[in-house]
Image (tube, rainbow over all chains, first blue to last red; front, side, top):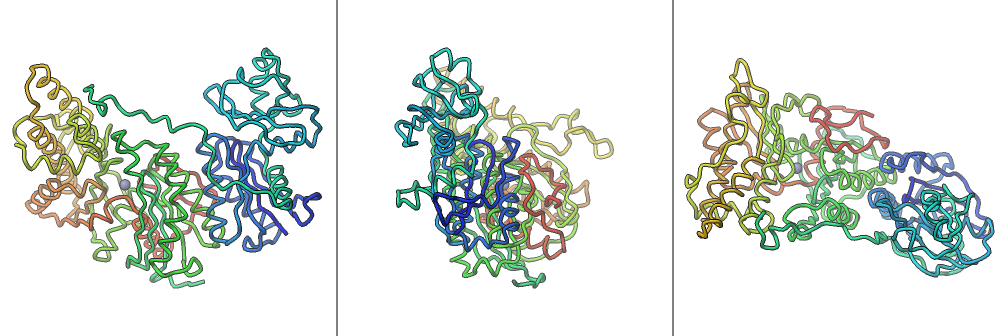
Length: 226
Length: 359
Ligand SMILES: [Zn+2]
């Protein structure tokens, strides 16, 4: 039983997982781009390679898990457009997973001792973040704010590395091991497999943008000229 | 899988601006032209907001694909190849269509062509009257672009003769409509109001028509066949301001008519001159502004007096759509052009010389 996992909330990533035993998910193949702006180029060829190497027909997948963000919009949409289309053509179920859950999964596996925060870059001097408990249950978020608004807890993820000094100034503790970690398709897919096995409800594939489009109604539309 | 290349069954995908388009053609026959537009969502902004357009593309893609396949009565298995707009256009918008197209090609194991949006506006001509004539020029006028092309061969030789150096013509319509309080999209609103106004009431500037830009046929100036509409837009704004300052009522219909005349005059005269100087005896009109009544009227008149045969596809094929992408894809498959594959990037400034991206 195979699951294809896709996340593009940071760098493009994809993984093909064997999930028959949810407590022993095996990685058949995985891909993570080293660039942060090549989602539309790199993702589809990577998925094709994963399937070819496994000589697996997409129609035989048990499902597709996709990270629904939060993350920079353009990259995020590449993953969602890809996952939705693959799901439609192959006729396999699509499951949404909040992207920060992927880092949470890795953090819990590495051992956490208290509530903690997962944060990734949201650009514009902000981070996308969420608060979890020691079991990995989501307590708060996802949010998008400056790091000064984060609770003073251990912080995991690339958002922590990016703003480590400012975070430490607020009393938060930056996880050294995770300071460059982005959501990975492997962790996202593994988490999805366990949730599916436990019969938990999954998210839809609606993107979590957390920000409006920023479009402003021009002055002349409001009755002012020039 | 079908292998007939004489009448290939092609699915085309368009997402370069605010229309999510899926078209299916068989050879030169149009089977379906499904379009979902996010235009309504841009109305209060008076122009296309790229982020809003991109969000809409993501939501509309699969439903539009599903309905296109259903309306055409074909399955993905029967499709010979998929074509997608890779540029030019809004980068974030292109990215959604390209990602979806790649996934579609990958999942259905079909060849994928990354296609030039501007050339597709010409290629659509085959769906209305079949094979395109020799000595063909194209005038493309829309909210996103304004170009004159020389089409030597749709499969491998298209040359850009002229283009706007600032705003697109349709963009100028939108901005002027905003100034005049006519709402969005500006083209239809101005076109309608212009019929009640005097096109000679105000003499607005014709961009890039001064001798230093135009030169002569023997020694063409730098912008002989190029357009500029930003000066015109500013002139309209100044004009409206003058009336307001004097506390007079703004003669909206006269301004609309005079603005429209300035746009249409410069577009048609430059297009006809470019055709004459490049030996192009046929002209195809494309782009959303092809719906403009005055543009069609004046272009038809000027082409007729210059001995140029004008061809205007139905308006549903002139505005951005997936059928035009499929039509160009069909031409490329028939000509034996190799598919692009899955590794290409979008190119928001894709030149017309890149009709489809190489593998
Ligand atoms: Zn167009």
